Image (cartoon, rainbow, N blue to C red; front, side, top):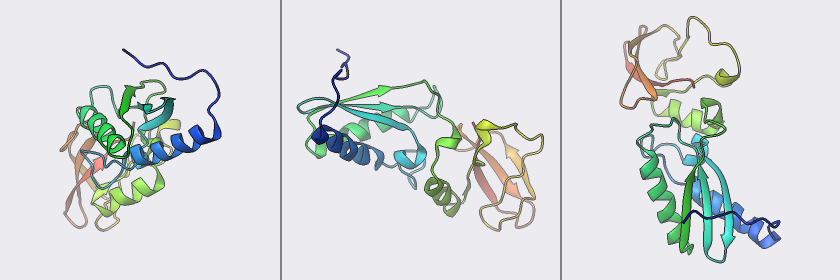
Length: 174
């Protein structure tokens, strides 16, 4: 049975509880990019208390075929169960679609620190340039080349820096 969010306004207690549950759900590491959390990735869209001991979490996958969404769902359920929430429903929300603009500044920083070139900020709201300057996360050079349109996951491409010769993943703009 699919839960139906409450229709009355949440009480101040429920609002604080929803905020805390959203923090907990958002603290889950991404299964494919464990250096960033689901909150930093921008995929946890909402948390709603449905009733005593019951919560719904809205999750937007990075793309509709994302294989990690099942692991994300299970990890969110587990962390909320571990913090005393017996009934957890994770609902996939496809509208509005996720974009790389949803990644927080902290998430972008952590990707770069881990050797993954983060997507350009604002890429989803403007024209895509014909030539994409991707900065090497190792040396900072923009003299990079595409090795493969796909890397360890479908949302990343494999590139190499011409300057330092190091290969690296680039999180593609969506």
